[in-house]
Length: 333
Ligand SMILES: [Zn+2]
Image (cartoon, rainbow, N blue to C red; front, side, top):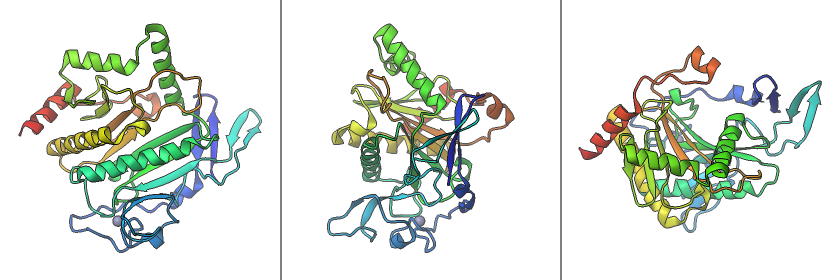
């Protein structure tokens, strides 16, 4: 059974999760691996996972059988569990929650070997629709106060499974850095009447050096204070948007943009390890200001050391202005 512990010195939360110890080691794939007989996420191996929570399926196919586009299952090596009692305990001055939460795996596609630059726009669309469906469903659970949506890709991205997958963790507490971000967005709106992300987008447009691509409704740029080389942030520019509420026609536009961005980054970095995070608007908080989602693509080219761990500040050896320039050039080729 895992626990969520509060760190009084750092004002942060730590998940102590013994189940994670038994995760398999990451196995690099080779280009030949269309399907892996031992992979629980490959189509045809549905019996190797817990029963599905959700799936986008072909008409006429059945639950936990072949014929799906995306499939969502509980994480076998979960950090938190929905079955855990939702109880706050005290141990002296220390606070402990009994590991309550949701930890789900979205299996992004049936095929084992596909980099995101090789995904079709339809694959992106199904992926985004699945994230929308799971976020919408988890928001109904009144015990969940924060939802993390993220993707680990490759050994340097912390993945233990090479089949394309995304994870979703719902927690009864709001992590410190997220809480602070909400506070900044909220106080900016209260003092200026403007959405912080709108101001950032406007500044990026005026400057222009870090903008990678813009469509009717979305903008992609390398953030001014990028923490990773070739980090790209995507957000909505013309619609007031939480990702789980975007209509299908806009999701199609976003799918096309993501497909283009991954192709551009791969042209610069080759097959690269990365993390993706997708921000979800605050759930039940005194937060009544418009929220714009962001998708962060974080290529993992360099490993972090003691400075990053101890300070929480990243060292990024490549200027974001240069990264954006290279990405724009690769799309012109
Ligand atoms: Zn697989």
